[in-house]
Length: 114
Image 1 (cartoon, helix red, strand yellow):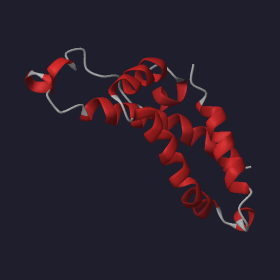
Image 2 (image 1 turned 90 degrees about the horizontal axis):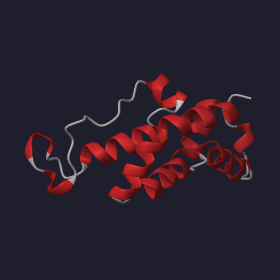
Image 3 (image 1 turned 60 degrees about the vertical axis):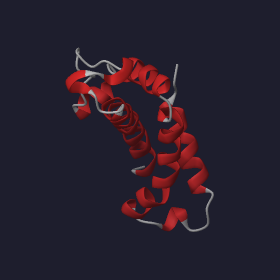
């Protein structure tokens, strides 16, 4: 089970140790943590099996539902990516990235907006 909320807490905790972080405004804090957030997402989605697992786990997460991110279409086929959904895995990766980002954004917002 992934714990993206815990990952968000670690991202924020590490960022808060940087000199001057607490003096930044909200937008600057988001900019400061953007690279760390992207590293977490990239780690989770760099292989198709990881994307598939991530989507399966997050597709019913309340933050994903609230963000309006849909599950993969029923006719999406990864095997050799044949037919109209042949996109070299882009939809798979984009969906997994969007779901992870939605969960991380909500969790990070709780830390930033304190």
